[in-house]
Amino acid sequence: MFVIVSRYLIPKGFRGITLFPFIIVSENHLKQNPVMINHEKIHIRQQMQLLILPFFIWYGIEYLVKWFIYKDKNAAYRNISFEREAYANEKDLNYLTRRSFWKFLNYL
Image 1 (tube, rainbow, N blue to C red):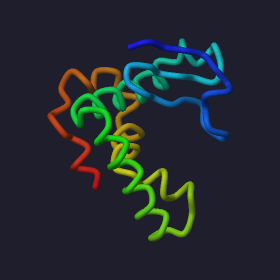
Image 2: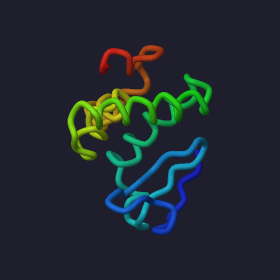
Image 3: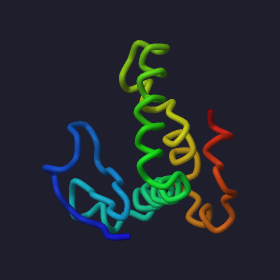
Image 4: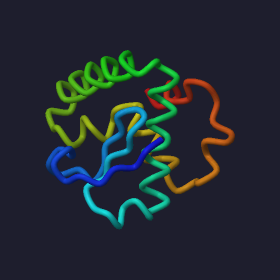
Protein backbone atom coordinates (compact mmCIF):
# COMPACT_ATOMS: atom_id res chain seq x y z
CA MET A 1 0.00 0.00 0.00
CA PHE A 2 1.30 3.43 -0.99
CA VAL A 3 -0.26 6.72 0.10
CA ILE A 4 -0.01 9.55 -2.45
CA VAL A 5 -1.13 13.16 -2.10
CA SER A 6 -2.68 14.69 -5.22
CA ARG A 7 -5.61 17.05 -5.64
CA TYR A 8 -5.68 16.35 -9.37
CA LEU A 9 -6.33 12.59 -9.14
CA ILE A 10 -9.30 12.89 -6.77
CA PRO A 11 -12.82 13.46 -8.15
CA LYS A 12 -14.41 16.73 -7.06
CA GLY A 13 -16.14 16.44 -3.70
CA PHE A 14 -13.99 13.52 -2.49
CA ARG A 15 -11.05 13.47 -0.09
CA GLY A 16 -9.57 10.14 -1.10
CA ILE A 17 -9.69 7.26 -3.53
CA THR A 18 -8.16 3.81 -3.59
CA LEU A 19 -6.74 2.28 -6.75
CA PHE A 20 -4.88 -0.83 -5.63
CA PRO A 21 -2.13 -0.62 -4.39
CA PHE A 22 -2.41 3.16 -4.05
CA ILE A 23 -4.39 5.28 -1.63
CA ILE A 24 -4.63 8.78 -3.06
CA VAL A 25 -5.65 11.63 -0.75
CA SER A 26 -6.36 15.23 -1.63
CA GLU A 27 -4.38 16.88 1.17
CA ASN A 28 -1.17 16.04 3.01
CA HIS A 29 -2.71 16.05 6.49
CA LEU A 30 -5.07 13.21 5.45
CA LYS A 31 -2.08 10.86 5.32
CA GLN A 32 -1.99 11.13 9.11
CA ASN A 33 -5.76 10.62 9.60
CA PRO A 34 -6.12 7.04 10.90
CA VAL A 35 -9.88 6.87 10.22
CA MET A 36 -9.45 8.05 6.63
CA ILE A 37 -6.59 5.64 5.98
CA ASN A 38 -8.51 2.77 7.59
CA HIS A 39 -11.50 3.49 5.33
CA GLU A 40 -9.24 3.28 2.30
CA LYS A 41 -7.48 0.14 3.61
CA ILE A 42 -10.88 -1.54 3.76
CA HIS A 43 -11.22 -0.74 0.04
CA ILE A 44 -7.74 -2.20 -0.58
CA ARG A 45 -8.89 -5.47 1.03
CA GLN A 46 -12.12 -5.46 -0.99
CA GLN A 47 -10.19 -4.89 -4.21
CA MET A 48 -7.74 -7.68 -3.42
CA GLN A 49 -10.54 -10.14 -2.65
CA LEU A 50 -12.29 -9.39 -5.93
CA LEU A 51 -9.03 -9.41 -7.91
CA ILE A 52 -9.15 -5.65 -8.60
CA LEU A 53 -10.85 -5.35 -12.01
CA PRO A 54 -14.04 -7.20 -10.97
CA PHE A 55 -14.20 -4.86 -7.95
CA PHE A 56 -14.39 -1.80 -10.21
CA ILE A 57 -16.93 -3.42 -12.52
CA TRP A 58 -19.11 -4.42 -9.56
CA TYR A 59 -18.66 -0.97 -7.98
CA GLY A 60 -19.73 0.78 -11.20
CA ILE A 61 -22.74 -1.43 -11.81
CA GLU A 62 -23.89 -1.16 -8.20
CA TYR A 63 -23.49 2.63 -8.35
CA LEU A 64 -25.63 2.84 -11.49
CA VAL A 65 -28.34 0.61 -9.98
CA LYS A 66 -28.38 2.65 -6.74
CA TRP A 67 -28.47 5.91 -8.72
CA PHE A 68 -31.50 4.61 -10.60
CA ILE A 69 -33.16 3.60 -7.30
CA TYR A 70 -32.35 6.74 -5.28
CA LYS A 71 -32.29 9.30 -8.13
CA ASP A 72 -29.42 10.99 -6.26
CA LYS A 73 -25.69 10.58 -6.90
CA ASN A 74 -24.62 11.04 -3.28
CA ALA A 75 -27.25 8.60 -1.97
CA ALA A 76 -26.18 6.11 -4.64
CA TYR A 77 -22.53 6.43 -3.62
CA ARG A 78 -23.29 6.11 0.10
CA ASN A 79 -25.35 2.96 -0.48
CA ILE A 80 -22.82 0.99 -2.50
CA SER A 81 -22.07 -2.13 -0.44
CA PHE A 82 -18.31 -1.44 -0.50
CA GLU A 83 -18.84 2.09 0.83
CA ARG A 84 -21.38 0.98 3.42
CA GLU A 85 -18.87 -1.51 4.83
CA ALA A 86 -16.03 1.02 4.80
CA TYR A 87 -18.05 3.82 6.43
CA ALA A 88 -19.55 1.47 9.04
CA ASN A 89 -16.13 0.23 10.13
CA GLU A 90 -13.69 3.06 9.41
CA LYS A 91 -13.41 4.06 13.09
CA ASP A 92 -12.60 0.51 14.18
CA LEU A 93 -8.87 0.46 13.53
CA ASN A 94 -8.73 -3.29 14.27
CA TYR A 95 -11.55 -4.18 11.87
CA LEU A 96 -9.33 -5.64 9.17
CA THR A 97 -7.70 -8.07 11.61
CA ARG A 98 -11.02 -9.88 12.09
CA ARG A 99 -12.88 -9.10 8.87
CA SER A 100 -14.21 -12.21 7.18
CA PHE A 101 -13.79 -12.92 3.48
CA TRP A 102 -16.18 -10.95 1.21
CA LYS A 103 -17.74 -9.25 4.24
CA PHE A 104 -19.10 -6.48 1.96
CA LEU A 105 -21.83 -8.93 0.90
CA ASN A 106 -23.45 -8.34 4.30
CA TYR A 107 -23.97 -4.71 3.22
CA LEU A 108 -25.90 -5.40 0.00
